[in-house]
Image 1 (cartoon, rainbow, N blue to C red):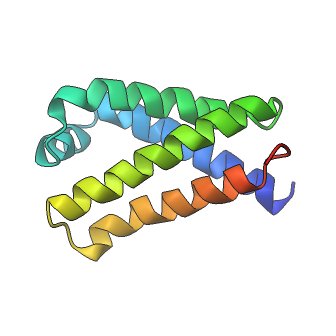
Image 2: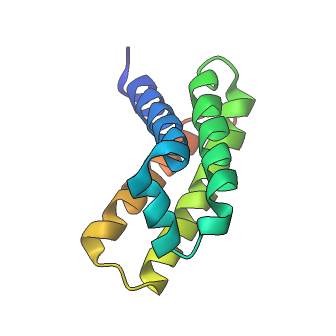
Image 3: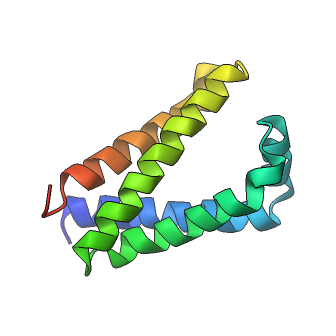
Length: 113
């Protein structure tokens, strides 16, 4: 297994876990409230689940990888914006930046781009 495949699988599984946690984790539910996104928690969680799964499936179906990683890149850009807006410190923003970079890396390494 090469590094690109590992990065894709890590990114996909991470977002599946984040998506699930947005439904069941009390800590994540309170974070959505802190971010001012409590009313959007379920839809964001659904997008994370679907796109995380799509990234993993993208190993077989490249167009799904492109679409899923593009949506997650947009989500991470919004996450960074929200965290800056609520004045989170850099250590709280770094995970979103890291996943933005992973998403860009994944999208860049698809066969169609």
